[in-house]
Length: 103
Image (cartoon, rainbow, N blue to C red; front, top):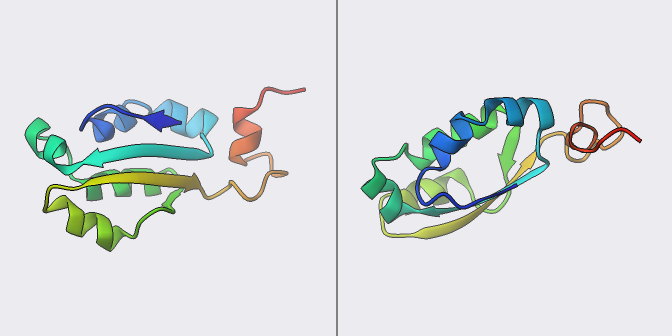
């Protein structure tokens, strides 16, 4: 799932609770433009990290520390997330099984 919502990632993900639970995309990709986040009065990147971790996602492109440091400046980060079930494709609870239609 690719997101490009110009600073409103947290709001979009909060509104996508059913999608994240029922269909569980295996990968999420998004951009964080820290200037846009501050201008939009959006939730902090750390709030978004916690939201995604709550849904079983782990960030694979950056460390939380790198994101926190970037949040205080004028940075653009391309973030990539993987669901914790991504490497268990045979499990009925894996993101692959949830995303793929039955045969």
